[in-house]
Amino acid sequence: MENEQTQKDVNREEMYRLKNSQKPIREGITRSNQSFLRFNHENPDSATFGAYQMSQISVMDVRIRSLRAQAIRVNFNIDQLIESDTSTFSESDIQDEKEQALQYSEMGDTMIYMFEIVYKERHEKAQLELNQSLHTPPNPVTPLVSDSFLASTPCLPRTRFTGVKTPVIELPQFNGDYLLWPSFIDRFVGMIDKNDTFSPVHKLDYLKSCLKGEPARMIQNLTSIDDNYEIAMGMLRSRYLDEWPMIAKYLEIMLNFKQLTSKSSKELRRLHETFQLNTQGLRNLGFPFENFVMVFLMATKLDSETRELWEQRVVELPRTAGRQAIPDAELLFNFIDQRARTLEHSQQFKLGITPTSSKKVTGAAATEVSRPVADSFYGNTGKPFVKNPDKKWTKTRQDLKPVPIPARDESKCSHCNGDHKIWNCDAFKTASMEEKKSSVSKAKLCFNCLSPGHQTKACSSKFSCKFCKSRHHSLIHAPAPQSGRFS
Image: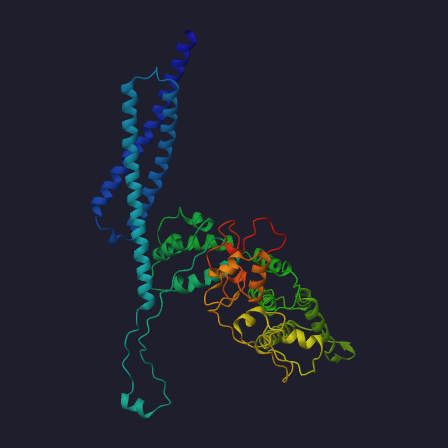
């Protein structure tokens, strides 16, 4: 009993301590809300906010977010304490505490949501101003000479309106990649930093909208005032203007390029582009890499046949004072480009020209070449085909002609030569299985639909044997299992 009373006393003391820590937080939220309401009354139109108003919003935003986070932690501890000992605190106290916590939570959330709306409107307005500045036509200039003079002087250039609207240029984005930093900073400086129509606070807002990830977190706490723009640019330059990681990345890409296993124009183009882009990146940093080391490294990535041709090109270089000349990067790049174009041309010739033979063919070879495939037999095309059906057929002798096959009346029964189809033939129905198979084979009929002109594997009929569901006609179904296939 004494232990229970002691635990209740401890819980009351803990609740008293939490209430004391909660009091200044709620007072701070109340004062921030009063400041916000006063600011909102004095500045009802967010479209007219200047640098001073935006700095006030930034200060209030940082403060209310900090107080909101502290209130959440204290409320969580109070809820945990109430749940652990419901008998110590009355229902009215618990209900009153929940209502007050909800009231202050809604007060802080309302302010935060309002600040986010202002930030969004500010960003959209800045983006609109940027697009308008990029597409504003130049002021008309009074010509120094008359139109008649220009018409009589065709050598003078004349500027005319073409009626073509230039596309909208989006601001560059940067997520912290070292390789993308030079491109990002050059584009941002050219579009925003050197544009005198924007104030420093506008440039800072543009800069924040371009950053993601780590760069955005670095400057997110800088309020939008003129002085902070140069501070933000200095922070980003000191963080990402590091040449060593970029050099390492360029070299790593070239070193890890896998050696080509076969001659391919596409792979050679990829090798050419990879080394050209990365050596250009190193040159832009002030560390050119187009030396004999790069030439040797790039040559090791070639396939065996192309490597042999390259070494032959190196051996053919002229000697100077008895010494073999060392190949340079330009020679290797030109060699790979020529090699890729050669492979592309040879591939086009292979696809466009089918070689023919003028040699005399006799014996089994002539028989094999002139033998028609099954489809041409059924279709009665009368054209000789090669054995491989995937290749185009070619005649090997001008005097080699297929034997013409007489046309057969498909309306006649191929079993009894009657005026009916074979599946309606009573003689065929009562014949033995061997006789049925023989009649179908001799007439070159499909075993599934008993029609001429195609094989069983090419039959488009949706019907099959009604006894075993196999791909043969029900009239030639064998009751006992057969050792061979019908098709």
